[in-house]
Every structure is written in structure tokens, then in C-alpha cells.
Image 1 (cartoon, one colour):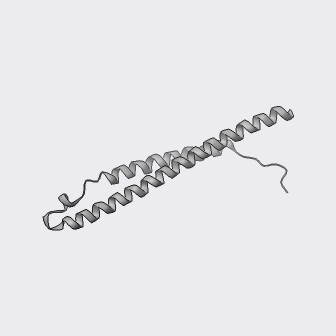
Image 2: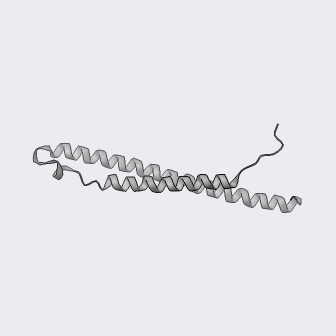
Image 3: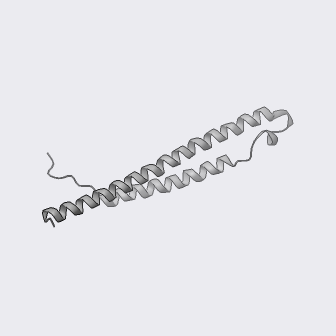
Length: 100
């Protein structure tokens, strides 16, 4: 049995930063895919339906990437909040029990 649980707050915060960076990159990719400019008018007179289908595929991909970016940003926020709460509790415990 372990005598203590140790949480490396610097690593938790680093993970949150990495998730935020990922969210920013994926969000940028979502915007790029969404703004691709391809559609029925670009596909040509005889291929409008195919162009529309391709455009819809790009939009679905953009929505999926947007959800991924949002989930990553949300996870980063939860990690930051958890690290802050743990840090506050650790300070309280240290003061209360005269540790360190």
C-alpha cells in the first residue's frame, strides 16, 4: 500500500497547455476545411450534385473537427481547474497540519 499520493501539478498544467495547443490547431483546421470554397458552382455544370456532396462532406468534417477542438479545450479547462483546486487544498492541508 502506498503511503502517499503525489500529483505533479506542473505535469498536469503541461498536459492542459498541450490540450489547448491541440484545440487551437484542430480548430484552425476546422476553419480551413469549412472555408475550402468547393461546391456545386466550382464542380462544373454537369457535376453540381457531386460538388454539393463533396461540399457536404467537407462541412461534416469541419463539424467533427470543431467538436474535437471544443472537447480538447474543455479537457484543458478541467485539468487547469483540477490543478488549481488541488493546489489550494494542498496549501490548506499544509497550513492546517503544520507540514513543511
